[in-house]
Amino acid sequence: MPWDQATGKRHETTINERVRIIELHTVGMNFRRIRAETGISRTQVAEIYRRWMLAIMLT
Image (tube, rainbow, N blue to C red; front, side):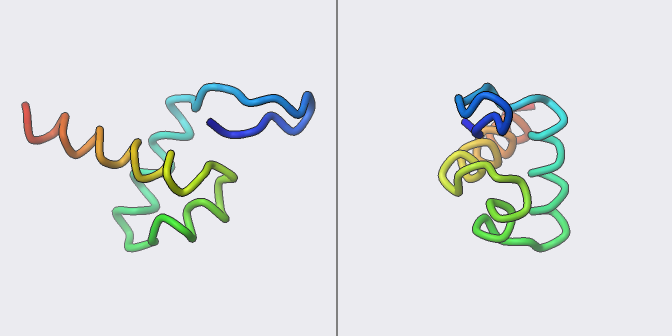
């Protein structure tokens, strides 16, 4: 989960953040660069992408 800049606490990733992660990876950006771009941890970025790929395979 990313950190909220205002409160210093973590928050759930929004749909917009998740879509942005998928878009960035689709155009060739790796998880570390996406992490730097979005502020969401690399492992969380990878997990969001993995779940998206799994959902596509199951449909």
